[in-house]
Length: 267
Image (tube, rainbow, N blue to C red):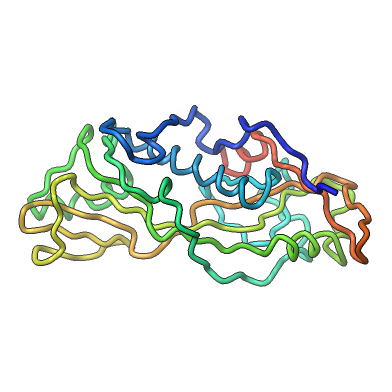
């Protein structure tokens, strides 16, 4: 029996970023000469991740940007007020951080324009870059990518069995619950679109960001470690625990609504 309810493909975009996600080869694969602005590039990255999660884990799972608290894997949240954890018994052991399988359409570099504001990674290092003779300004261009994409993810069968049995089932059977099944991490990198040579030049770090300036004036700024960026979530509606042919019940899951994801993202 299919335990997941299929939603229209239009619900696979990242709701936390709300506005329409530009699509096409220039944003998703990096092909062509079109320069995307920074926000559009981030949205395209998120959309590609969301589609990959739905394809691999099933349409009941969606991603949402972490803009506030990072909830542990197994967190059971009130979909109307996600700040409330409603079932501590559902907590699961921390999962290992596992590198994502190669996804060229997600990790490939792309040229971006900064738009009216500098990307946060550049804005936070602007003073250091200026001291090294590098001029960055709104409207400038650079190369952007996400590296070291990885996830903490409970195996699907283990996750669905855990939330459908024992104390977790008892605490959640009578209500809708938004579950966190996984967390996606990545390391952001922005570098000037002139050739960057790592040897020589200036290198330092500030606030968790690595800063490099080459002898030719090219620069690179990047997160020193991968940062938690998205929750992988699903919804267990009230009274949707069903018996199967196995000895254990299995939770019927469905994709969270756009409104639920907006609340989780604080939007």
